[in-house]
Length: 505
Image (cartoon, rainbow, N blue to C red):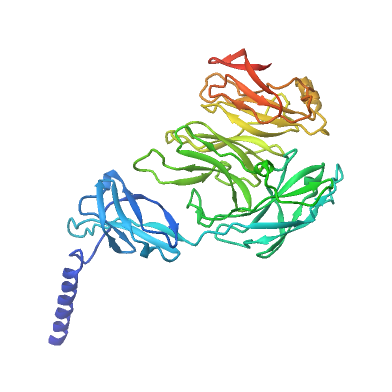
C-alpha cells in the first residue's frame, strides 16, 4: 500500500511539474486572444517572393503591443499598428510549395487559463500559373447556313494548337464560338467531345448556323487558383488563344484574326465611380458568369479583396447559361447584365434577357441580395424578344436596353390588342427604358419603347449598338453604325426625369 501511495505522489508531482513548465503556466488552456476577422492577401502562388501580411481583428477583442503573428505555429516578426491591425513580412521560404498555411496571433498571457491565442484563418498557396493556349488551325473552317432547317445541322470541328488543359483546379480549356456580323451568340461555350493537349474536338450546334455570318473560334484557359463562394483567390495565368474565323455559308479557310474583328469577343468591364468595384464576365465551370470584384481601393482598414458572382438566383445559385455585358451603378451596389440563364428568376422568358442584381453593398442588414428581371413589359411589347446591352442610371432606377425580335416571330394576339406596336416590332432591334421604381414611392414599374418608330430600320441596313443612358436618365444616346441619335427630353415622368423622343444631332 505504501508503494502505491508513493507512485501516486510521484505521478502527481510530475503532472504538476509539466503543467508548471508549459508556455502558459496552466494545464487547461483556452483560446482567449484576439478575434481575427480577415487577412490580406488571402492567397498567393507558390514560389512568390516575400510579402507583407496584414491581419485584422475585432475592435472589441483586438491586439496589444505584445501581439505577434504566427504562421503554421511559427512566430513572425510583427508590427503592432493598432488594436485591430497587425502586420508581418512572410519570407519567400514559407511559400515554396502549394498548400494551406494557418495564420493566428499570440498575445501575452493575461491570467490563469488564458493562453492569448486567437482563432485561425487559412492562407492558400496555389500552383504555378496556367499557360496561355495557342490556336493554329480549325477544321472544317466553314459550314453551310441551315436557315430554318437546323435540327440536324450541327458540325464537329477539330481545333489544333498547344497548351490545351484537360483540367486544372479551376476547370479545363474551353472552346468558344462568337458571331461577328449579327452577334446572337456571344462567346458561347461549345460541347467538347475529344481532348488532348494539342487537339480538341467540339460541336457547333445547328442553331448557331442558321444564317450566313462570320464567327470567331477561341480557346480559353482558366487562371490557376482556388475559387469558392462568396469569394475567389486571385487567378494567375491562363487567357485566350489567338482567334480564328469560321465562315457560315462558305468562303475562304479560317485564318488568324489580327484586325479589329478580334476585339469583338472582348467585353469591356464596368467600374464604380471610385474605382473600388469592377464588374466583368468570366468563365466559371464552363459557363460565362458576371463577377463583381471588390478591390478595396481607397479603403485603408477592414477590407479584404474579394470577388462575388452576381449572375445568381435568390438562393445564390449561379446562372445555368452564359451572361454578358455587365454595367454597374457608381456606388457598386446594382449590376445589370444580359443572360440566357433560365434559373435567375421564376418564370424567366426564353432567350437572353436583361437582369439587375442588388448586391446590398452599402445597405443596412435588412437588405437581401436579389436578382430582378428588367426586360419585361406587361403590355406585351417584349413578348418573343431577346434583350441585350443594358445601360444603367446612377441610382439603378432606370435601365435602357436593346430588344431583338426574330423576323419569323408572330406577335401574340393579346399583346397586339394591348399594344399595337407589338405587331410591327418584328425583325427590329429597338431600345426600351425600364423604370424599376427603385427609391420611388407611389410608383408602378413600367417599360417604354423609346427608339425608332415601329418598322423603321436604319437605311444602311446596319444594326444599332447598345444604348447609353446618362447618370440621371435625362438623355439616352444610340448609334446605328453610321449615324448617332440623342434622345432629348420631351415628356415628364417623375422627379425631373423624362422620357424622350429621338432628335438627330
